[in-house]
Amino acid sequence: MIRTMSWEPGGTLQTGFDVSECRKKIKRPREVLWVDIHDAEYEESAAVLRDVFAFHPLAIDDALVETHVPKIDDWDDYLYLVIQTIQPDDRPEDGIDTQEVDLFVGKNFIVSYHLTQSHTIDSVWERARKNPRYFQEGAAHILYQLLDETASDFIRSTDNLDIRLNELEDQLFDNPDPDLLEVIFSLKRGILNLRQSIGPQREVLNKLARGDYPLLGKGSILYFRDVYDHFLRLFDIIENLRDLTSNTLEIFLSVVNNRMNGIMKTLTVITTLFMPISFLAGFFGMNFFKPEFSLSAWTSQPTFYIVLIATILFPIGLLFYFFRKGWMR
Image (cartoon, rainbow, N blue to C red; front, side, top):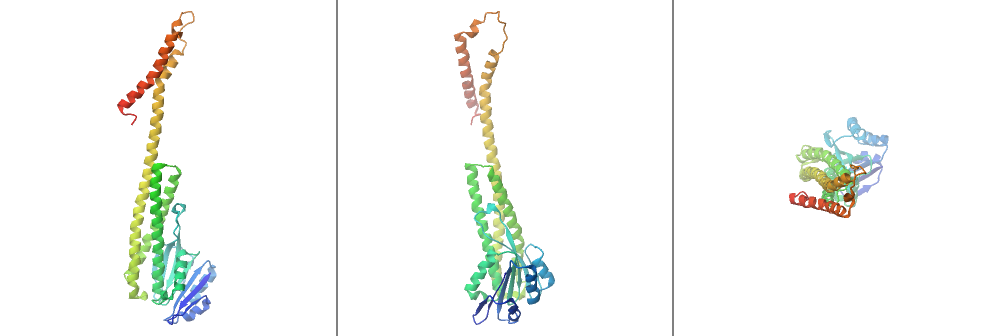
C-alpha cells in the first residue's frame, strides 16, 4: 500500500494522488510531501524510491533488504534514518516486539517505509490529515512528530511494564506460582529488547539535537532536543526496570526456597515425632522369645496401658523440646 499526502502554502491539503505526481511536487520548494509505503511488493516499493525520488541504490537496499539498528546517514540532499517503533500493549508478558521504520527526509519531503502497518505512522498520519499545520514547518516537523510519537509509545510500554512488575511482586508473596517464572523471564526478554532499541535511537536523537544536519534547519533543533530528553529518560527507566526484574526474580527464588524449607521442616518434625513410636512398635513386634516361656505379663492389660501412654507421651515430649529449642519458629 502506498499513500500520499501533500500541503501547499495556501493551506490546501491533498491526499490520495498518484505517486507519479510526486516528481513535480518535490520540485516545488514550498510544498511539503509525505509518502508512506507499507505492505507493498518489493518491486513496487523499489520503483518509487528509485524512479520517483532517485535515492541512492545503497540507501534503497538498506531500506528494502537489510535490517538495521537505529541509525542516521547523510546523503547531502536527504537523510536516511532507521528508527524502531512499538505498539503499546497492556499485557507486556505476551511479548514486546519492535518494528523497523525507514525514513527518507529531504527539505520538502519525507518518505516512510515499513513492512507492515505501524501504529506510530498511522497516528501521526491521521493527525496531519486533520490538522495541516503539521506541514507548515516543513518535513523536519513531520520527522519530529514521528520521533515524538515513537517516544510516547515507548513511555507507555515502560509504564505498563512497571505496573506489571509491581503486580508480580504482590503476587509472589501471596501465591508464588511456578508459572510466574515464565512470566518474569518473558518480561526480562522484553526489557532487553527495549534496551537494544532505545540505546541506539538515543544516539540518533543526540545527533539531531546537536544540529549536525543543516538540511533540517536550525528551528528544528529545539524540537529534537525535547525528544532526546525523552529517550534519555527512557534509557534510565529501562535500566531501573531491568534491575527491578532481577530483584523480582530473586524474590521469587527466595520465596520458593523459604516455602520449600517450611515444607521440609514440617516433614522432618512428623518423621521425628514418629521415630520413638516406630521404635516401640518394632521392638515389641519382634519375636525374641521362645513360646515355651511364660510371658503373659507382656500381654497383660497394665503393659498395654504403659506402652500406650509412652507412645502418646514421647511425641508430646519431643514437641515440647522442639519449642524450647526454638526449632518450630
